Length: 255
Image (cartoon, rainbow, N blue to C red; front, side, top):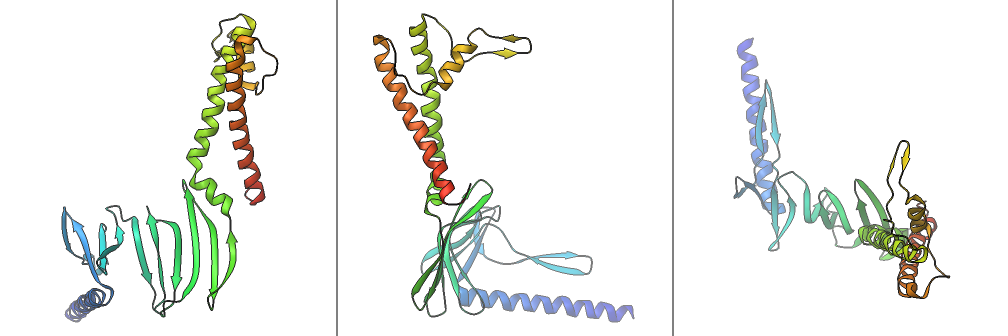
């Protein structure tokens, strides 16, 4: 009985091995040449064999890529994250084309049927760990039907760090300019940032609050004219940028 189990196990392992060889041959000759980078060397791609008890597992490799029409596609880095241009096919002959960045779909992706007719077009943007679908178009006999179109959300996320830098830079820079204005207006010499601890608040607290919440100057001493213009311009830039973002997000239904 034990002898029979051993023979069956050997046959099962041999069958898996031949299936693996057949699949590797089909993938290589139909889909293109696939390679993997191992210890700094470029090698033909192969599945790795892992045996645990009586079970045999075939593991894929990271840091791989393919050649297609002389171009490198379908790349994964050493952490198995998809990068760059990808072409993904299914069993029906349909295929998807687009870009990956750290396993996130980036920009526009297009789906085609086996006759190279465009079926669908999508666009995803991501911020941090969140992914957002901002465009989805279905094509029926080359006639587009728009299902999702969030232009403002796409613009906001794609330029998030630029917009935040504009808001923070203008409002924070205005804070120090206002301090100079109020010191001249009130004949003081306060630092704009106040200090607080239980039972103690620095004497420049009122000065600091004025600097933070003064967004427009209309009455001022003549010697403050240039500083006031700069402060008012920065207030307009910061507040209008922030307001435009809030209105845009509200209109797009994201608030």
